Image 1 (cartoon, one colour):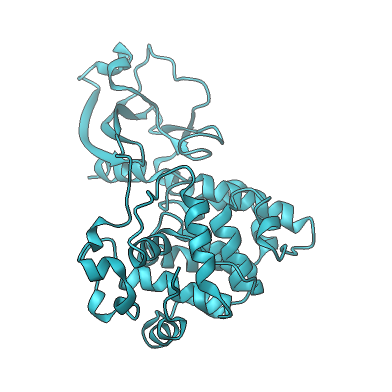
Image 2 (cartoon, rainbow, N blue to C red):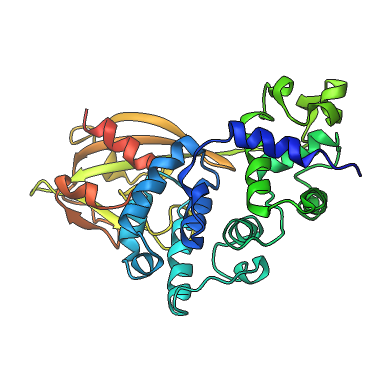
Length: 337
């Protein structure tokens, strides 16, 4: 296996790499927060959340000692809320050990929500461990450089590509080299229309040589998304208060708050009275494995209908103090029109 020119990559990175706040920090807490936020979140979207989150929880101890509701509220809008719950859970465990982070990726992987990618990122960026971080960008760069037909969605793909990635590090500084490799994938070796002409590795890239960049990385499975249709109800009682409840900590939107809702074909007949409850809008929300169509209804609470267990009444003005999933934030915008 040939190894692309490390110095060419590092020179490009020093000239073209973005000035991102977490890159100038050697604090494992800051690096950890940034990596968790940037999982399944683009840098442009995640940067303001990162800044607000650290302002609200500047240290591991402040995060560990904060109520979960406060953490979820700070996370509101980022999605994949299990990330926030695990971040909070792991912070509590680390805080019990005086806030000291393990220095190896194997030990870091034992903490809630810290998988192989995040563990290696913390170990490499904060402690200089000689490991390569394998994210989507690095997957793409490696698969194109070697024109490798091994599917990135195969069960053994992580182990396979991790071996290839680890072989690229050599004696380079782990933190700088990892950042450079990830940045190459983010800015140049993009999923669509890669800027191969300015790539420091273009001369050795097999996909570029054969004009097959769009064929890599190879995916052997196609993602089939199911569909769900859910009706959400913004119901006001005689005092003008609205009903919400907190969802279970596990599962979809775990620990966040919700309005009364039902599968569209299972709406109670009492909530179908058009004289007091009207449909005010609908929209679609995409998840990784399914799409949800949300129909939004607004009206008065039927006197003869009993609210499901767990719901409590709040002033509409106080809704912004609770953490809701992005889909419901969009619903509130429809309701407030």
